[in-house]
Image (cartoon, rainbow, N blue to C red; front, side, top):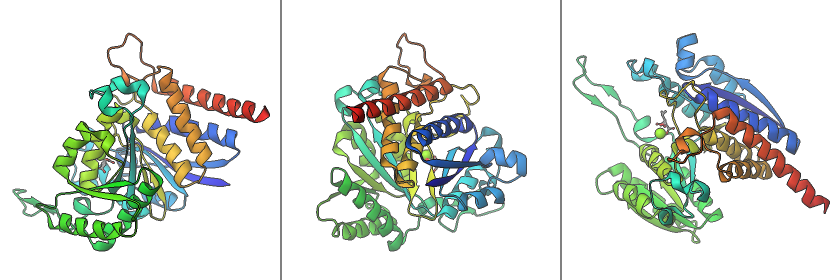
Length: 368
Ligand code: IPM
Ligand code: MG
């Protein structure tokens, strides 16, 4: 099987972390005897600099012609003054819409060996394992009308809009995920204020009838933000709209210990899109110190959801955990310990080594 992957390194730390993810995928290809073809293209600020647009046609065409897209990050301070449609982020949003994946899966797990990286107490986060299912193509990100309403820019508007069909399709993804996990969905909205949230709640409640084995609860987004920090172990799958999911997933990084750890998969559309949850981190870009875990774990999600190579996905996840368990940490995971932190490429090299060890152990086991 050959998987065609378009790699979009993008801005800031994007190129540094995607390089390590690609390296791990190459290692996995050798171990598992699969074939990946990588095509690299421009997006975001890097694309604006070279072509004048954040999503060049060649990039979009390459993405649409591939099996999956692996993206690093977009956004750079140099472009902050541009109009919304010209900014690096606009390239990503247009890409998301064109690839048409509507369910963005963001797993958040607390690993024991880095529990000290979270400011939350160890007993609060122990065993926490949450999957945020974020609706990715609707809500305020795409609703019309939008924009500045007058020439002088004294007023502006955005529109939050959802249809029943948009809510249903992402709700099914969340319930199906819960069936494979611990059987609970927490649907998050602001139904005490917003009509879109009332529609969200009614629709999710109806979809839940198709999944009698799954327990459904509803929380307001403000309360959820608090409960997530107080009792993360109480959550299994969180289902929510686009902006709430954006905010809650960054917050949930506190449970894992660093935003640099979180991966995401966007599924349901024509081409699946994989991107770490973190942004371009311009403050540390180009120094080789970024945490590649989120990008590498996104590659693992690609193997699971697009390539259907579950064993290979598990190998990458096990390798990441082995490196973290061995006490190896990038700078974002340093918490006053005396041990020096390692660089992005050193971390990637250790994951590749761990992958080889895991494969050797498997062979040894089968040989017995
Ligand atoms: C994310 C990011 C993006 C978003 C930005 C870069 C447009 O914050 O993937 O969480 O808001 O969706
Ligand atoms: Mg975000």
